Length: 291
Image (tube, rainbow, N blue to C red; front, side, top):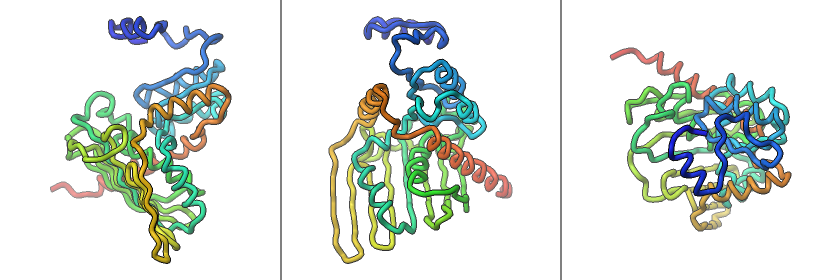
């Protein structure tokens, strides 16, 4: 729907039809509407599509903040016809790790999420988009929060924009406490340096370290390590996954009537938690005296 030559050429190559506005999408022969826009623009468009009866796949998160997500909460069929693109759920390690968390008494979860970016510009540099916790860290926020009940308290949070000097938080560190006890620490930042290993062809390095009473499980990119209390160890490596391709396959199942891996309710919860982290970090920043 962009009005430039690239859109027309790509449509011609794919045999696609270009329409000038969302409202002109042909409802009768459209199986799925995919929305991948800056976070602040998505809620209103997704709500309109849902209200018109479409099944919708939207890029994560559902909104930049809880206020924006309220637009979607009022849409028809948000919990049944909306799939939110949290790609971590497409990685084969997630099912194993999630089951292990359910089976164990978890003490703490420590996450390091680093996305390689040469520059922070365009929509990522817009303060309304929320910065790195909302754009990248929210992947881990959504997954970890899906394991535990209740709303966590933000015990501490800090943010910095010193890596690139943009107008948004580029590095965020936070500590949260879930009602039943697990402590969740998150470090999320955009990095100008390419890491040696990572998801999505190395552009995203993710480590989730789960400590429990009877053991420890560490997921690092495409490897999974387990230490048992009795001294036993287990290692499992996975072939690098194209998480976007896996998500496309999940979207086809969703088109056929399947349930989304991440529902609107869970995506909303992740947005609310990210919103709380962002506000807590901003509050801490204001407490720092000027040099």
